[in-house]
Amino acid sequence: MINIMVAGVGGQGLVLATKIIAQAGMKAGYDVKTNDVVGLSQRGGMVWGSVRIGEEVNSPNIPVGEGDIILGMEPLESLRWSYLLKDGGKVIVNTKRTYPSSVILEKDRYPDEDIEELKDKYDVTLIDALKLAKEAGNIKAANTIMIGTLAKYLDISTSIWEEVLRDNVPKKAVEDNILAFYKGYYHGKKE
Image (tube, rainbow, N blue to C red; front, side, top):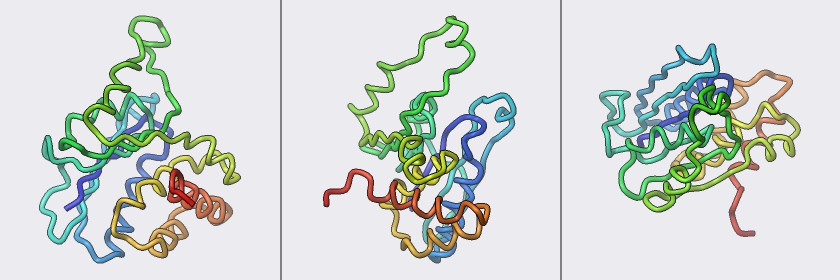
């Protein structure tokens, strides 16, 4: 069983990302359970989704300490959900910050040190998804960069990921999203 938490803020395409991951798992023949919470997304607040992929999955909820991967669309949200991970779990973090209003109003500080400390306990991959999405031709494909980065840790063929992307992104953005997927997939790999 693979337990994935997708964490971010409203407007980052988290619901679509969760759907794409779940559909790829199903097309690969796995049992998949998923859920998401988007109520705060209207105000740029935190949103999250869980995807559990395996031979038999009975619940979409990830038990504390059993998470395998956090796909963090925003660093603070990666930190917020890290308690779910097992020791040595994987954290894939988009480095683009979205500051909460308490930080903007200078009532709180952005927890840079706490985010940096994730590296002490987990396998952390930092990725500038916005930069790579621009290189792919569509800044709206940052979440697809993140999905591509996640995909290299799952036993799902790239052809399935391509099929699911084609089924779920707007037709005019398909090629940009496929390119974005592969930019994420090959990011950090040695030639």
